[in-house]
Image (tube, rainbow, N blue to C red):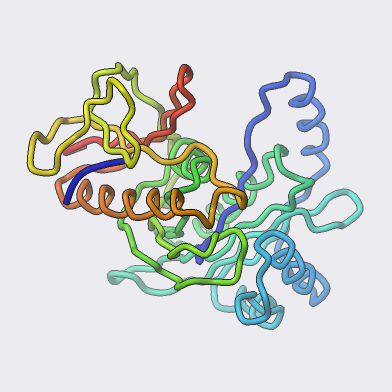
Length: 292
């Protein structure tokens, strides 16, 4: 190879840089209640939210009937509700046996667009972890699209998740506009429930670190697959994928490059330590550490 640049689909919140907005968001967030999804009305609201967030059709949505019964077998279906009882977001997953121990597959985490920047996604994940710890479920697995920088930051830096596998085209091509018509490659990540995982933090980075990227820029030290194996390398992702940029040749190039480079890195002893966004250039990278 040449080294160049849940269905768990997650729509996380992001932090506000504006102090006034952050204060308003904190006030609004204080009125949000996280609780199990129990009634059929709750379950139908989750179905509608799936359509709103991901644009799913009937064949892709998790039906209300499954959401309604999953907690009987140790699964989780929980929602975030405002003071009026309106569903703002939900998390859903199922439990089973993985490698001889209880584990949980977190299939969906979705947050309504009007409720982002309120910490809803993180509170739902914290509720999920605490409930599964109470049920003595050891580990939580889920997936996210490696092209999505905000999701990568949320999962690795905020939630402290560890990447365990890169799966090409995990769910096949879907009708969701969020998937851009591209192969649904996913990173499988994991956290334990024994204690709240510490967030991953960025490293002090210098401009001399080797880079794996689809689009080398002047000054990049591009890592060659048949060359060195440095202790730290940067794997570039697009800083902001959206519906306008998704179904393009450039997006396809990002997808195939990330697939090739991530699989190469994992096979050569690297792990994804954190996500780093370069302040001066706006470029986004996975910080890959070898032997960590």
